[in-house]
Image (tube, rainbow, N blue to C red; front, side, top):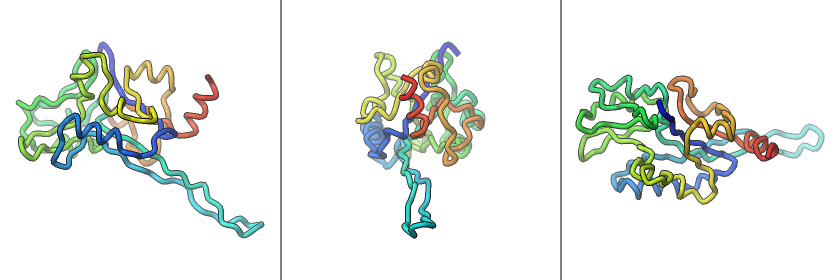
Length: 199
């Protein structure tokens, strides 16, 4: 691999607004309910009663998480595809679908732990994020990244992102990235605080 692209999600900045998802839908003209990027909000923490005062206090936090294809080093979608329609491109590590080879069987979607693949109901071919490869050729970011009003979504060479931000955390609500060697960095609020403190 000459280089490997990947995404970073800073949950300390993500509000779960869905602007990145809307940009993806508009860019790819997905008028049938599909989206290659999905925003979910995960809650963690709980309420507890203070023993001294009897007051109820909480440490509840809601985390916005924007997810798409992670262009994995070991893509389970490609391993599962019976026709070889899924392929990892050498020059940038993007996992792409060859529509001429795709038979729409859905084996790739069942294999992907991130739920990144969708069936196009018209063409009966599988579809997913291609990191806006047309924009990459022009030296631009994927639309979802540029659309984020808070800078919560970053795209680039994963080795450079890891140099800047570290490996991030492994949230319990996401699949283990080692399953597919996902090219994804998830920064939880405590990660973001460490990075900001070191600058």
